[in-house]
Amino acid sequence: MTQLSVTIMGQAYKLACKEGEEEALRQAVAYLDDKMCAIRDAGKIMGNDRIAVMAALGIAAELLTTKSSGGPFADLTISEVRQKITAMHAVLDVALTPQENLF
Image (cartoon, rainbow, N blue to C red; front, side):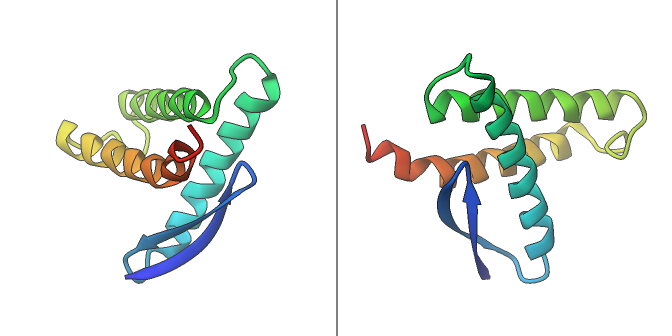
């Protein structure tokens, strides 16, 4: 396992990933950070946990739309899509755990 230091919405996190998957995780973090910052900057949703949930829902909807329209995920089974969503949840859990200590 490799450990990466990343930043999501200005908050630093250390994430673990399999060796050789660092770039994919960095891309996922950048994508998540962009989505969460856009939601935060829109100013309609307050609280990092709510922002994270809205970002996760948006990303899941994008994934499912891409899957149904013959995109790169079209050949995945429901089980594989669930695995990808579970992986996204794991990233969110790691990102939000320090926030829980604030409340």
